Image (cartoon, rainbow, N blue to C red; front, side, top):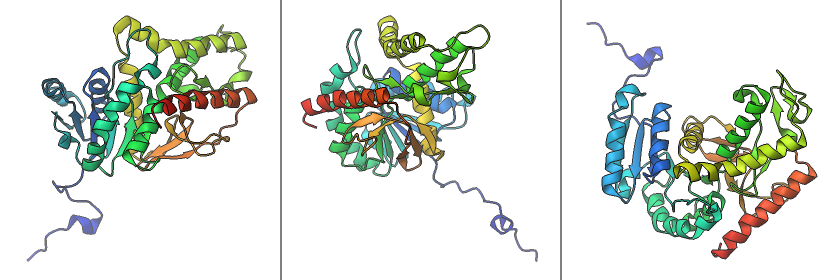
Length: 333
C-alpha cells in the first residue's frame, strides 16, 4: 500500500484554515479612519480589517461599503462595530478618532477633547489587544502620543504616533515639483512637532545621491536656495490648513502615509520613517514625543537614527520639543 505524501517532508507548508492572519484595527470611522481602511485594503496591508466607532450605523455602513469592493482588491475581510471587542487580537491598532480640526484652528487647540477621548477608549483597547502595536494618528499627535503612553502604560516601542510621515511626503513632493526629479528619488525628512514648529532637515537631505544643499538645478530648474527652501518649508506647514479650509479635512494623503506605517509593522520591514516617539537623550532631548527618523518593524518603533544636525536644526528641534512639552504640561502630563 502506497504511503500518503506529507507536504512538510518535501519542504512545502500545507494549508491550514485556522492559521493566524494579520489583523488591522482602526479606531474611528470618520474621514481619516475610513479612508485609511480603504488605502490599507488596496495595498494588501492586512488580511483582516476591523473598524471601531461609537456610531454603529456609520461604522457598519463603512465596513459594508468597503466589503462590497473586496472583489477588486487583495483578498481580505472587513468588519465594523461599535463594540470594542471587534479590535480583539489586532496586530496593529491605528487610533484615528478625535475632535475634528476646524478652519483656522491649530492642532494644539484640539488637545483637550482628544486626550479625553483617549482616556476613555485606550485602556479598553489595550485589554482586548494587549500585544498590538499602537499608532496614534489623531491630532495634536505628539501631545496625544505622550498622553497615551502615560494612560496606557505601554512601553514606548509599542505605542508611537504617525508623526511627520505625511509632512515628509509633502516636503518631498514640493522638492520634486521644483527640481523636476521623481519624488521617489528625493530623500528628505521633516522633524519635530507635527505642526507649526516642525522643521526640514535640509543638511541630511539628498536628491538621488546628490546632497540637496549642493543641488545646482536640472532641466531648467534652479538650485534650492535659502529663499526657495523657506518657501517650501512654509508651504509644508500651511498645506493642511489650506486643505481643511477647502474641503473640511485631510484624508487621502494621511491615509496613504498611515498604510505605509501599517505595512512596515505587519511585514516587519524595518523601514526608516519619521514617526513621533518618546525621545531619550536624542541630541540631548528627552521626555517628549517628537518625530525623528526611526526604524519601524514588527515590534514597533526601534532605534532612532543619529541624524547629523546643524546648529540651526538642533535649535529648531529643541524649540519644537519645548512647544510640545509645554502643551503636554498644561494637561497634566
